[in-house]
Image 1 (spheres, one colour):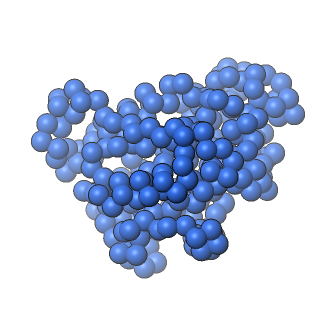
Image 2 (cartoon, one colour):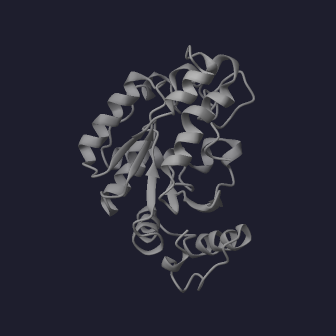
Length: 245
């Protein structure tokens, strides 16, 4: 992590240890406790981690809002899309729609290692028998490789999405990097209002009952009143793909 770029009013030079980086995350959360998503993005991109931060987008049900805020701040920030080979066609279409709307300068499709897929999932059915390994091969490992040049990355997670995310901070430290969650405090009502305010296009599957959209084999419609992510890996005890722990 390029800690020298951190603002001196946060900390002069944090320790290159997990405890030191956790302390940085805590101080950032205090500093930006009442900040807007645009203010958080502006600071993270131009002050804290200039040239060393990326945004990871699934181009799922709520992705347009974070991308809208990013476009207001800096269209040159790299956008990483985990192209697992298992997405809905509608997701790939939505990605292209949003890319055209916001005209980002650096969009990267991150694909799994073909040799690893050939070894562990030659028939493309690993999701049925070992969804954790499937996610590891198609999401976790490719993302770790793609994040190599970056000291921080931006996610679109929110506290309201599931019980597991209820205490999500705006800044967190994990695996040697700071993760930035500019929409952590947003509620479902906030998201809906923002989509209307900014006239953002919705994912084609959203109005068909898909409130959180991942890979096609592991995503179901969500019943009214359920967590937004209840349709992800339904029928298993799995709630996250592994890139967020």
